[in-house]
Length: 51
Image (cartoon, rainbow, N blue to C red; front, side, top):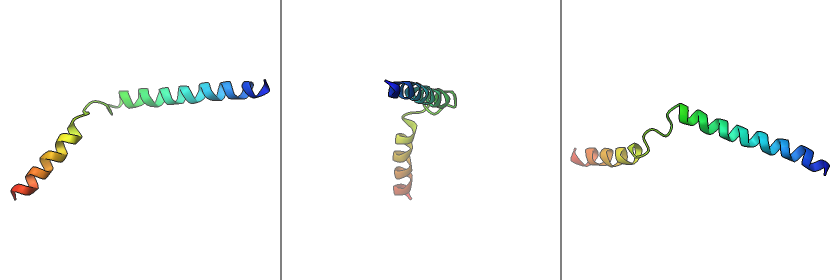
């Protein structure tokens, strides 16, 4: 039973830390352009082959 007094606050704080990190990533625009990187790879390959 005493283990739960340590594990529950640790689990809640880790969950809050993960939620805070996710909200920070949303706020800083990490999820704005999900398809852009995949398309940029194809565009770069096309540009190199045309030269």
